Image (cartoon, rainbow, N blue to C red; front, side, top):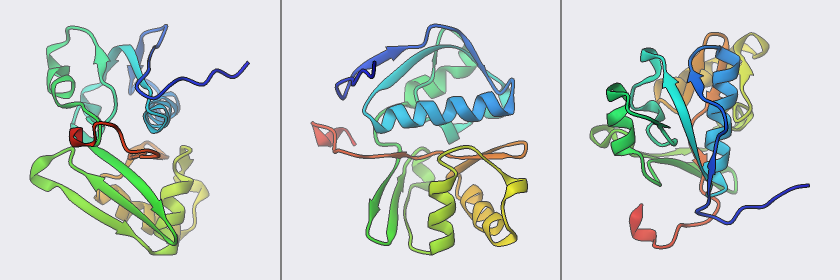
Length: 170
């Protein structure tokens, strides 16, 4: 049975998760958090994050619940609209304000960049990409639009499918 949740709903993950413990599990979990945000659903989860992943690259995704002081900046800065994308005909528009001092409005209109951005919505192994695709991935990594976990890369911004109401929250 498929259950559709209304936008703004919250889902509580049943088991604690250690983000960063396994590259493949972490990439899948990041993709799940991102995809649920695209649906307007926030996953509330418990667990921890290895120190290497605690930076602002993930602040647009729901942080783990709990008392860990190291995760307080993430919990205090998380909100809707920090890093999302929208599709247009032949381009992808990305808004990124995870770090206010480096806020960006980007437009991907290069076919290889756009293809790799969308392909890596599903975690992708670098070893399975061509040199041109790796070059595009490296450019997206440099812009902090992808997360690299060993040989895996995953796209970070979530898709804004419908504008939240009230829109002034973004």
